Length: 290
Length: 290
Image (cartoon, rainbow over all chains, first blue to last red):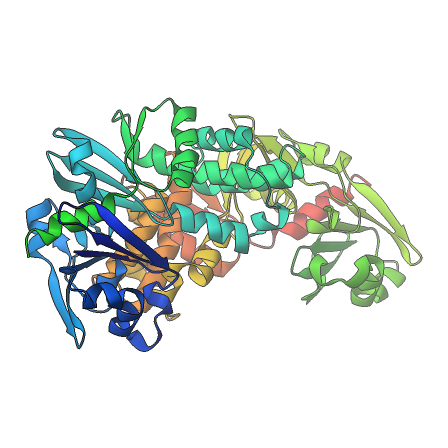
């Protein structure tokens, strides 16, 4: 089969053997936002047309390609959902060169009834189910919009999204805080200070101003301020969602696993890092339903 | 005397009678950031040179004019501080046309030892002391960087700053949330929903993503989303600092008093609005120490 992970800013294609092994991989900065005039079929043909022509089995896609801005808006499946419910939500697209399937995203509502959504992460989690095993688990997928997911016996029962990475970018680039910052090597001490700062009273909006005040008083260098801000935002994310629920399973790139690993270490939270290439296994298990 | 409120983006001059009454007022968009080559004396002469030449008494200034980017960096006075301590921190500047005094800012440290600062608000509070009276009071000065100040028997004992207004601006202008927003009339219902949202679990970073998710599900119009975001940030500010401490005294423009008044009303918190023109009275009481 051909497994496609198609997000906002990146495109990854995998040719899989009949037992799910990855035979070949291609990636390109061809996220859905960079595909002109919504010519998604042409973009797919350009990246993986030879595999498709060779009859390498079904094409299954996940990520923002199934969003309103993507190829076809595939309705979100609703939590709780496991492999079966997510597979049932796939929708077919056809073009002159072939046909393919797009996975649905997932939605839930928090205790207050406010909706939440994901597109792509649900397939990564499907691919990590074997590693997770049965029981109740907390999975964190850090990023621009971090996801915290409760998985119980192989089904996604609830999740929350946190704008941590995006908040870091906008405050660093567009707020007063950015004027006192300079990129440099990560300052592990300042990062851990920021993570722990989240446990103090006063709230995030106050803690943010403290970045500036500490800078004014010479307590933070321009490069340390970047690490401190990053740690503070990640600390608030963890603080607001973790609630002492024990071990956290991290599902992300090695680089993000390193950063979040430092944050969990500063808070004394146990972590297991999941195989970051789980999306191919998730798409492979979805293909079994076609 | 001549009272000058000189901030980052605005300049206001007041000619006061010997009993403190305001005889004349001038304002200009001549904040310290728009004064070229730090020619502050020339800028002051241009705005109020005739008053100074007429010998209208001492010139006393407050605000960011006393910051590192201003005319003279005047060291912060430390909390707790009342009129006497703030007056003792004034520093003199002299130029060919005259001399003047610049008020110090104020600093404190929160429970965790992280510093906080203000420049200008402390003089507004001095001018509101009579209206506040004795006892312990919570004063809120909303804005780009909102200040929450504890005043006990005429002295500022502690305060916290919250980047509420700036966070609103950066998320509205530079984040994904801004793409689903359109300016329009304030939506009072959506604003109150946002204020109350701050009391839910999940934290601010999660609540922010909820703005997007509610938009995706058609639960927020493009203009309602602006009001909802504004209410949410103000709600988080109030939530994190108020802690049921009873009545809040609001010290700000009528426009901000209206917005924050709606937020306090949504939370059932009692409010007293202080006279917004308190800065002249604060500068007048400082002049008595010269």
